[in-house]
Structure formats: structure tokens, C-alpha cells
Image (tube, rainbow, N blue to C red; front, side, top):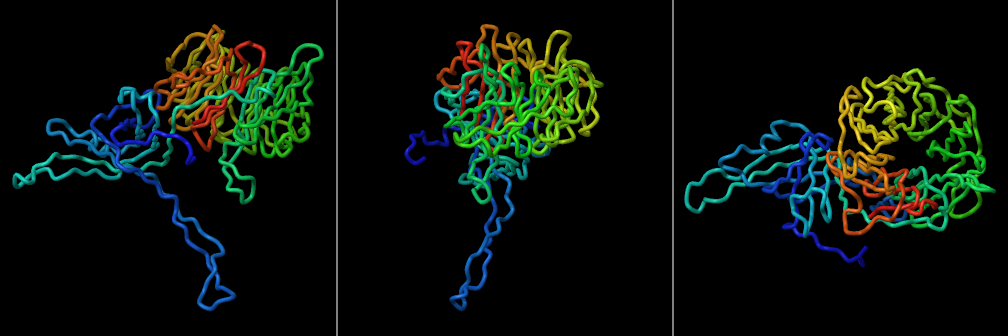
Length: 504
């Protein structure tokens, strides 16, 4: 870190953006050209010692443990000129009392008011104004005359910073077939109970089977160090003619679902080590219904939802025991292609002909009031930000969102929308969204939004060129760091798989 070249931040090169009522596709960011951001801070909890008497010295004590205190909210003060002829926007926001998002962008060459171009952005999410104040408003003498400034003190739930992603191709020596799914299965660990990790180290990529004669089974390529080093092993319980569909981490297992094998295939995560041995996969078909095979899986840790043909929805609690049917094509008979769950009680699934189904209790499923698309246009991906805000991508290259739980839908334009396919969406945080899209050329594209989907920008932001790909089929962002993105797909020659990792 100390040897890296960097550009020192200067206070004159920062600008403030506010998103009133928080980042959302219909909430525009505002450029606050007359504000400045003062010093941000966040307390991570005081440390209290646990002591016992020193057995070797009277009057002395040994530290045998520690207690971490309550983590504090982030805070920042915004200051601006108090106008003599205009109402105060700061006071209005303070009186309103609703949450907002604050972003402080640093730049050099781009126009300061350009939201999507920055060297670095400090983001404070879910912020509340806790205090408003202004300087002395009057003067009793000539020496008292001065400009009047006003300030708001902001308390935020979350604070983090991001810089433009730099993408590098990885796993060229182990990935020979198209990558069709990717997951990051990791948690932050200081090494007390498990291996040290920042929560973004263990990445798993599922590939297609190799065609030809003789063919080979699908592979799982994986990295245990954040995408730097890669290994690959085949899913040996899948036949060469059996294509996998999706990948998930459920409990202590890596799980692959396949519509052609009408089954799931699992192996212990501990089997995926640094180049030693093959993971021991086991196939389980229990619970799957003929003709209603699985097409996608979304894991919540110790349980997962699986969706498939004919509108079927399954529950997976123990990979060794198979699945149970939650919905036997009652909510919809259309094939379901993708699912996303916020909890064991709430999930949304999408499929062919604009089908959207959801559950609010984890058991009973119902169709959304309105479909975002009609017959012949299929939904390829879904992400739910909340119980009411859902996003879907389509087979004809369009993006839609609902803010009322599927009662109405709005199209959101993005660069090159309306052609090709929107393959997958990812929500790294409430503010940062990612998307994969391929044009009809074909050409794979990655896009990002830093304001909850209100505006979208092609990646990379810099003058660098993204590696050539026919399509990026799937993406995964790290829950512990919204800045990390992994994308997998088919390379520009249309033959080999591709993995790119975007980081600082």
C-alpha cells in the first residue's frame, strides 16, 4: 500500500451530490455546487480491557480479553452559503426529516457537475439530518460584517468509497467453456475461527459442458484469493450431454442445478482447495418433477429457492435430501428463468412471456398484478431491492422496474438499450447496481449505476477498453465490498469461457 502511486485528495477538488429520499430509479441526484463537505467520521466502538490479577506481581493485572463497544453511525457536516433571497434547501431537508443519500465526488478534468465521472466517490447511505445551524445573521458594527454560512450535520447508516473499476481477465488457463454462473461464497473473518478473509476471496464459476466427441462434463472454476489464482474441477456427476443451469452455496455445500439431468449436484465447500484432488460430487433427484426441471437457484445461506420449467418453485433446505415443491405451476405455467430472495419469507421469480411471481411468506406464491412484457418477450433476470422495488431484464434488451410490488412497471433506458439481451442484474448495495447486456453484434457489455438505477454508465469509466466478449452471462458483486465485481461469459471468439474481475 505504501509503495503505490496516488493522487492526493485536495479539498478544492471535491463536490457534493444529494439524493433526496434516497437512491431510487425515479429520484434524481442533485449537484450542490454551493456546498462543501467537511470532515467525515465514523466510530467503530471503543475497546474495553478484560483483566485478571497478575499471578507474579501484586498490584499488577494482565489483559486476558477485550470487549468491543457499540459501533457508531457515520457522520459528516455539509456547509453552504446562506442565501439572502432564496429559501434554504438545507433547512427544508432538515424540516422534512426524511432519509437521503450523500455523495462526495473527487475529480480533476471532468466537469464537477458530471455525476458519473469521478476519480473517487465517498458514499453515505440512509442518512438523516440531525442538526441545522447558521452563522451570526447580523452585525452590530463594521467589524462584525461577514458572509453567512449554514450547516447540516448528517448521520448515516453506511459509509464507503469507490473508485472507477479496473478490469482484468482471469482464469485463462483453466476456463475453456462458457461461464454461465458465478457466486462469491465468503464472509469476513479475522482468522479466529476460519481462514482470514475480507469476505471477497472465495469465487466459484460454473461453465457449460464441452461439446464434441468425446465431450466432457461441466466444470467449476474457483479462486480462493479474490480472483488472483484459479483452479478447475469437473462436476463428475453430470454427463457430457447434461448441461448445468445455475450455481449456489447452500450451507456447507456448493450446489449445481440442471434441467437436463432433472437433479441437483452437490459437493462440500471444503473439497475446493488449492489444486488438490477432485471435489466429491453427489447427484440428488429427490423432489424434482419430470418436465419441471430446475433452471435457477438463489441461496440465503442455509436454504435456497429453486425455480424451473412450467412455473415450478422448489425449496432446498438440505442438498443431501433433495427439494420439496412449493408451487406446482399454480401462480404461472410459464417457465421460470431466475429468482431472487430477500429472506426466507420474501422472494420474486421471473420467466417467459413476462411472468412474475412472488411470495410474502415463503410458502404461498402469487402472480404479480401486471406483467412488464407480453408474449414472446422473456424475463432473464430479477433483483428485488425491497418488498416493493423490483428490477427485471428482458430477452429484447430492455430494463424495467416496479415501485409498487408489480402493480405497475416503468422502463428505464440505458446505453444501447432495446437491442440484444439483458443477462443479469446485481445490487452491490442500495446505491450501486451492476448489469450485463449484450448487443446484437454480439458484444458483451457491463454497466453500473451509482444512484440506485436512476442513470447507467458503460464500464469501464476510464479510457481503458473492456476485454472483448460475445456476452457476459452472469455477474457477482461482493456483499462485503460493493466495489468488487466478477463477470463471466463467452469470449469474443465465441469459443472459450471468460472471467473478468473488476477492482480498484
